[in-house]
Image (cartoon, rainbow, N blue to C red):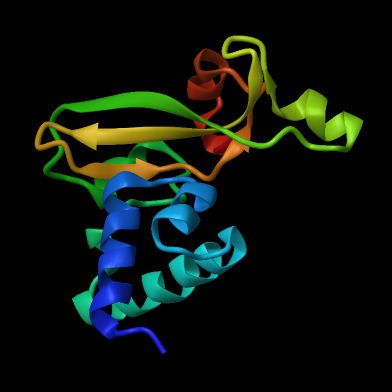
Amino acid sequence: MLQASYKLFFILFYFKCYPTFDVAGVLFDLHRSRAHHWMLRLQLLLESALGKKMALPERKLQSIEDFITRFPSAKEVMIDGTERPIQRPKDHQKQKNHYSGKKKCHTRKHLIVTDQDKRVLVLSKAREGKVHGHSAVGRAKNW
């Protein structure tokens, strides 16, 4: 059984750096599936301990109005995308969906919204590598 301080460090490190589960597994001597399991479980415990969910990035916003309601103090924001490399899928259709022509590798993508204090306000769910940022911003509702 691992110490609570080790698990706390894991989840705080995860939310600070957002490593892939492969990287988190290597750093914490875990299998990638165990790192994923820990993230899901420890996120709930962290939210419960903090007493509020807004300390963590938002995952689902449907409109600009939702964003303004959720973050009324945000006057300036920056929207950016990031790509994380993944292992090449064996299934041909998944290969096509995850192939990023820009990076010449297979990736998963996230959109991120930060405020002037560099707090991550919104972190989208991961999308296939072939989805491009400029088209995704116009269809942010689908993220």
